[in-house]
Image 1: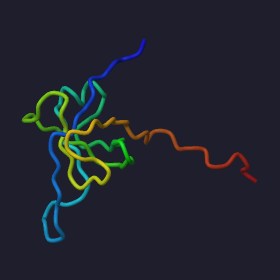
Image 2 (image 1 turned 180 degrees about the vertical axis):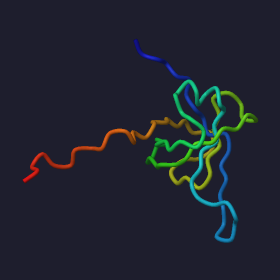
Image 3 (image 1 turned 45 degrees about the horizontal axis):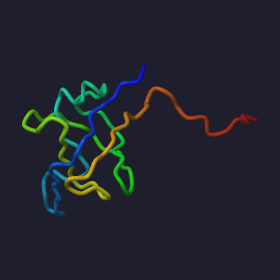
Image 4 (image 1 turned 60 degrees about the vertical axis):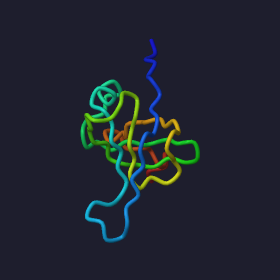
Length: 101
């Protein structure tokens, strides 16, 4: 059985400057949207946009509308675009080579 998720739309974009105290990539998401996707507060996720994908921490924000996310300093996404989130798999290391000798 597959779980159909509502698409996530970028409803806000925060661009920071060099001297800002809080900088770097960040994704804000509603807790109920995150729980549907099994994403915990502060967990690293891949954000797939229409042009590229980036790794960023996800934080909860109750003030967002359902299905909406706010991104900070993520290249390749703009307001009103649809993004897809994929949890980072930190439990399994990828096999880089089958030749161990």
